[in-house]
Image (cartoon, rainbow, N blue to C red; front, side, top):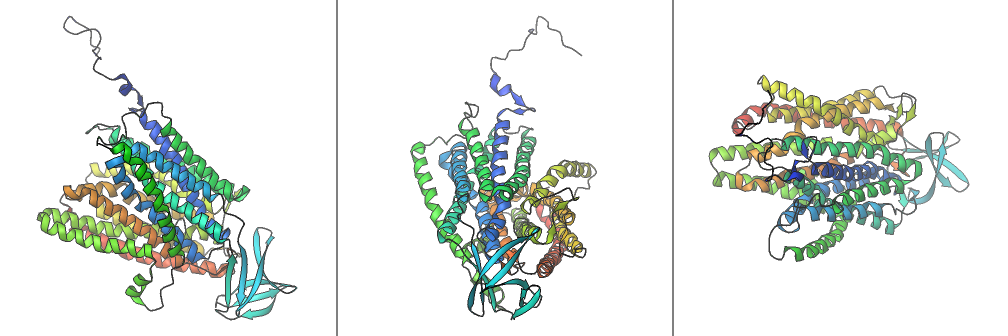
Length: 597
């Protein structure tokens, strides 16, 4: 029915009290969401593009062994998730989100750009019975072969399953090296290693200012109680997956086709585009992400910037300590393992191990029985969250190395993708699965059948196990070159993406609902600390799959395949046991949550 104007109702509504700018929408949302969506998309383009390259860059350009490379990767991602705790606080108290985002974008872009200056590729060598030999690398078809140079002879290096190494002359074993008597190494520039670690430190610092505060600005677009808020964040987070999808395809391709600098350079350009969208916003973001109304705040921003840059050398020292940490002694047990951790590991693990019980003890005395039970449920789920992300985050380390060494990367025989590009499967499946899973949870909720949060966490853990078991199954169908079809790896990422969607969307919401009101901020910090701890230990788990390499390549692909499959089997068994345990605990946890969904 159409209303017609009368004497008591004016022909046109009075809009003098409405700000016309606020009525401009983008898919029914504030127009500013489009700019923040694009900003996040380009920032994630840079981050995931660089992440797709990092482990391969460390093993193939600097020729670090698997243990050093995966440990450094785990330390880097751990700091990426830890620094937002400080960056978010500084923005809230002094900078404002907009300034923090711009500063973080500049520092991250400089970090990516500095990674372009990697210097010459490291030169491999081998030490056999304490005598050093040069190693040459020759391309033969689609593979590279490593040779020990012994005078006028070139002896092909072939590792054996028992740990010995054969040196072949025209396919015939000329010398057999006993287990433990062959050590590979590389001559690399200490200066360019320092440059690389400084670049990683800058990205870690910059991310701390960018990551939490761009989301804060999105929240400011909506007034309290605006029903569009959740949908707005869903749209915003789609930018993450779009950015990661394209960067994980393009950056690795550029790195292989034209060199590492091109891949890192594109990541730096993406980051600068992100900065430009905020810096040159034409007034569209005025009033959003502004500094708090405190006296003297404007003068403090430069002090904060300077102190933040002074943290870069501190992170550099943490990375150096991480790279030179000793292996735990055999049979040393849990205490020996913890004491052998590098400084970064001790700080992260110690903070988590002390912080969780301390907060629970405080909540026992400071809160009611109901509040304590809700906090206890939150802490149990946080611990299992560490387990999930520790196993899930093999994508950038052990799974990428598996893709490089033991995966046939041909797509239907039409073309071949690179090992770094295999990480795009996760982003692609998240985009495809998210709408269907959202509809599935909604439909189940209408029928009163939607799983509780603990059950979803348990399903996620079992899902991680199922993904790895699928890949282990695929290992039984490896070809004569000990490579599995790329579709087994794609299947793993499909299952892992499903598992991720069971746990990731509900985590932050769960923390805010279960926490005692006056410590919600602290509990959010513990949640991000748990993810940081998980990232670090993901690197430690990846070290279990370390295999002997010479010049960045394994010496025996069968040994490599067997090592990876054994590690993935162990991961699967652990995840299944812990997943079933959490499902059994879901009943008391649901009671302790007191109706929180």
